[in-house]
Amino acid sequence: MLLVDKLNIIFGHGKAKNHALKDVSFSVKKGESFGLVGESGSGKSTVLNCIAGLLQNWTGLIEVDGKTVHRRKRPIEFYRRVQMVFQDPYGSLHPRHTIDKTLKEPVAIHRLGNGNDRVAQVLKEVGLDPKFRFRFPHQLSGGQRQRVAIARALILEPEVLLLDEPTSALDVSIQAEVLNLLQDIREQRNLTYILVSHNLAVVSHMCENVTVMNRGQIVEKITKQQLQQDTPQNQYTRQLLLASRGYDRQAIDQFKEY
Image 1 (cartoon, rainbow, N blue to C red):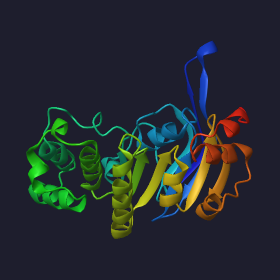
Image 2: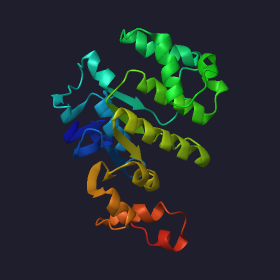
Image 3: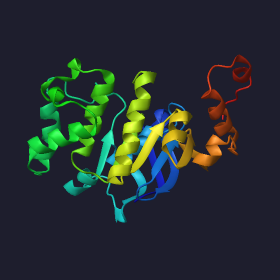
């Protein structure tokens, strides 16, 4: 469903030049949930932004369902097939638009029709009562706002969802609810997920295959089973796995830069 081959991107010039992605390559099967993990600054979100078209100065190859994705000119159908859910649900929703207006806007842009029915259906699908329809983002909790962000992505009936740390801005008690919701939606709609996270527990719960990134490069590709059985081969991946288990002073004293 998705192929990324030798993806590179450079920000800045001269001494300020930053080679943010270095020959990143991976593929994702249709219906698969694929994880990209790594610490902050490793390039995970940059990969998603290139796929989504938010960054355009990349080089390499991106294909969606066998069709090459161009850096700048993309048909409107691409944005129906590929949708993104951002990390901060408050920042990604227009503060002066009601939930109804937020959800109807992509329907109008893509001329799908039946806006009212589509909004009612998608709110039900993400577990929100119809009464939320005419509220503003500040009148919703963080978890409710993220459900709206998921609904906005789903209303176009996409085939691929790009999930950029979709639960990191939420309380721990709400994270599991949103993750389970995403799991259910993927099974019901046979969606393909690319999930970016620094949380290996989230990735091992959601994803069949995981790619580990560090400093803009892929350092290891592992399966869900290898992650759960604690058998990664790369030392950086082992360190990342150890860090995800909580604070351990003795372990931290042994950490190295990779």
